[in-house]
Amino acid sequence: MLGTVESGEGRLPGPQIGAAHTEGIVLSAEGIVKRFGALTVLDNVAFALSRGEAVGVVGPNGAGKTTLLSVLMGALEPTAGSVHYLGQNVTRLPAAERCRVGIARTHQVPKSFSGMTVFENALVAAQHGGGHRASEAYDRVVETLRLTGMLRVANRRAETLGLLDRKRLELARAVATDPKVLLLDEIGGGLTDGEAGELVSTIKVLRERGIALVWIEHIVHVLVQVTERLVCLDSGKIVADGKPRDVMKHPDVVRAYLGSAVG
Image 1 (cartoon, rainbow, N blue to C red):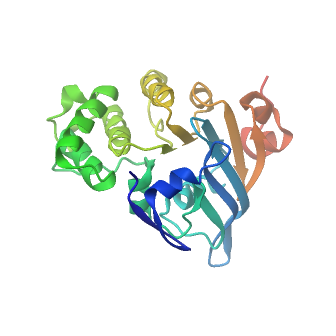
Image 2: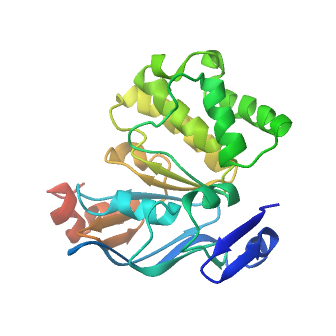
């Protein structure tokens, strides 16, 4: 059960969301515009994510990548356009409600609760983010911490963790909500290649479990280990969308992001 959610068109019972799902699309955005005053950050962006698909999002700083994730998550409301989840319009549904029906997100800078243990952080996510009842939430947290390699530090306070474990905890908090869609915002940022590789292994397991991914990352060689499709944003517009090798060689991507062609 997904519960009852708000949309721009009234209240929708959770089961209708799943029933309205068509052609394998789990999350989509149509004609998204986002302005902050006179500044247009997203300009008529259209995006679709299929069930179980992993899409990487690349682009230069200021291209609008994190803003797009915030619109998909519900942290920001678009100036124009719409967002659909499992076939239903959720454009006006707040982030907390989107989390409860199956969309979760990680942040560039981990946002764990200091003063709480790893286990407590994940438990809050499962109960309040995912809407799981106490006994169900406990089992969910144990499974999630085992999956993300954090069970060994379950009783450590979050603020005592090193960077890799803070990133793992950020991922664990999102996974504990039991998402169908997971939005990753530069979760590999600041890690060594070896550390990023450890996260890649976990994210691959999430894919195998059917979670659809949208992953923003500047470390492209890490990104393409998981994603079969890349989207490149520049100045708020999608300039390329396709297989990673094709996108990386696209002239607009080379000019906007890479600076030179990739062999």
